[in-house]
Length: 165
Length: 229
Image (cartoon, rainbow over all chains, first blue to last red; front, side):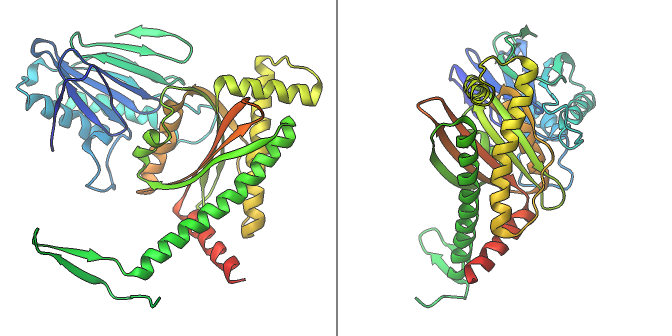
């Protein structure tokens, strides 16, 4: 797996993608049922974001990106950061997303957001990475801007609500 | 031209690797299937835009009509709407031969369309929140219903969707649930996309169809039968 440290100011993270960056960089993405997993090490001035689509890779092809699935994205993002010299004990995580965009529709498959939340939290606990902040669930999409210099997340919804985590 | 039915193996001497060349008939077959799907989609799109045109009493022109076969995760960058505030009316064909159909308008443009629709139907341009829900879903029902009816008439397949629902949010946030579901079902998304313009710069809409493998195969089979006469 090839990992590049990005020097651009604003970098969009697409579905199943992961980006690592050092300041001054904002990692950004938009999620509905997907989860933006943001991990950083304040002391090392480096952070990464993974755009998780599904809870697990059960039964799916090996060629899929590990960042597509909650259970594999958490250890993969931690490893990617540690390969840049970050110590595991200094890692912290923040998550956002996991909405149920079509709450009126009685279709459990579409409520994949809830399963994503549960699996990300389980994987973080298993990897012993503290989850220091979260903005998850609900029925609204979220635009996320992750400032790797401060570790802060700015979350905006279509209603104009802004949260800083 | 005579068809080649054998798999040929060529050697790239510089790289020292073997390149497998697919049999020509296979490529022709794939191209034909894509053409059939595009044709069936365009029949549906023509009917859908006619229905919308009658509804708002405005001329509608089809701007873009594409068929893409790409991994689901590449769809957002292909459509490129990102954080655009968007209203999506959604219908689903249930069962094995399932399909998700999305009628997409920018949020403000949908409001303009609704005003025109209300004026045309009831002589009023005022649309409150409760009316908006009903009107958006009725608009979706008429347009998406026309799309499915045309395909149903052409192929002889019975296509009965669940009632439409709608959501207004950032486009990529709406899309990701559909794409996650698609990732569980198949490797590639068959994305049929039609973009159309309503009236004089009133609105640009998009009709997107994500179909299951079974529905895709059924449509291709029916298309081939139609071609044979």
